[in-house]
Image (tube, rainbow, N blue to C red; front, top):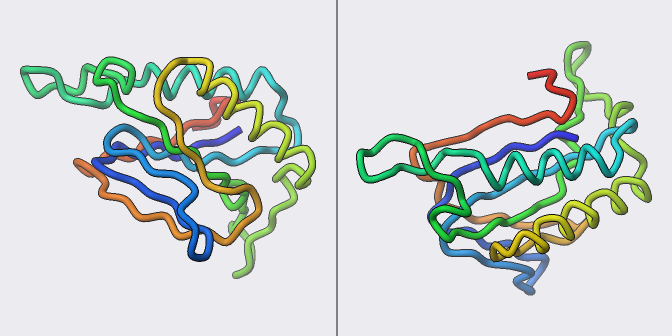
Amino acid sequence: MRAVVQRIRDCSVRVGERQTGRIDSGVLVYLGVGRSDTERDARFLCDKVLNLRIFPDEAGKMNLSVRDIGGGVMVVSQFTLFGDAREGRRPSYTEAADPERARTLYEKALQFFLQSGVPVAHGEFQALMEVSYTNMGPVTILLDSEKRF
């Protein structure tokens, strides 16, 4: 499972004319599910995101987590995180999970975030979404449950 985590001031997601979620401050998590991912990968990434120290403390050091600041988590499914563009000009998505499996693990990840007690909002699985946000820093962190990077 892969995630792109961005420290944000505000974030909202729309599908057509409908807003599916909004948070004021916290993290935006683009979440991709791989073919070999399991519930263990979802739990690992959720724990990592919730405890990632990317917010400034009183001294200005990135030393606080989204939990510490009382922020929220916006989760957006993003199968293109498994796109492989090393050859040719069109990415291959052979390492991405099939839609049914990806939906199951995406929803499991949402459950883990919701159980954490932090405010959670999300996009809509397999929908064309408009994601609007202000990245603070900017701070963008790449995570992979298999620790490839």
